[in-house]
Length: 168
Length: 290
Image 1 (tube, chains in turn cyan, brown):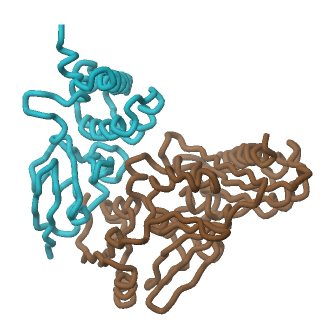
Image 2 (image 1 turned 90 degrees about the vertical axis):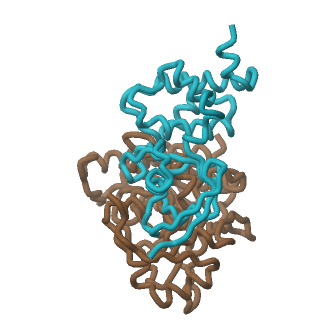
């Protein structure tokens, strides 16, 4: 038995015919080819599969694709404004060495983007609390916190962090 | 792993859900926030034949002040509880406890009804609601009943809900004047399951004597338990240090929380005693307006 679904992913309307047991994470990866969303633990602990559902970070391994019917989904592929330009958070992660193997990075970016939207000037403590649902086994988190705080500072300063960063 | 096959229905109204449960309740599982059920399905620890998704039902998500009590719709998400001014002002114990539930990604999906019906003895809301003397409104196609916590939680992950019944609302009485509450929990990492904890509400009269004490313990037994002996000890006292300490001892007497790789029975008992003592001390201070 399959169910027809229609939802918005990264601003585009997508359709699919899915088995009810298909997890949203697997729908994004296997049906839509959006493999930026990573599948780690499949029980909601690691945070690698974090996406945004109607603007809020959620675990895409703990939802069925059929439940996203009629909703708005954002994945890491939707972050960068163009293929040539990184999202401010991605730029800061790049500059501050906030990733090593990169497996956890998409989930962390989706969590942090939501944090900065609601809390534009977070304290280091707020960043760490928001980060607590995403495991990273490489970085020790320090550089992630630094990159997020730097992004917040740049966004507050001029709202155009990438250009500002590359200006002389 | 991936979940086993199931039949999926998404009713649009409570009535539709109830009529479906009336027919297929035995093989059905209700899907609320899915933050406990879906992991179990991913591991195939749970293999429901049918899943009744409640997320499409409008009108089950609300936090309302009604006369002398609070009414919370079963599909109200933890995030809504966390950010509710109404709760922060009148039922701060709930606000405090919700901060301990998983992580924000989990709280964005998880629901109060799901947590209560899942009946995990280490979960924050069942214990908190037990300390608050909450009542659970339950409906089926046959009618409706309202259950007190003691009549609702049956054992670890077991409630007295019949297969055709559904939890629709949580009712929480208002706290008397001069009440102070506190929720304390210990977990190895923030967001992990609590190894031990306590939810406490203390009420004092005008002279500073304790008029009511409510203590519920987390991860102490197969169900959230009230520490009756400790409550009796506190009522009438001036909530002095010696009494609070004696009450913490009394709260854990006779308990035997089952140990596992995260902590043995003796360790958990000490933890429960410490958390209870801290919660009592904090609640007493708050009740006395200090």
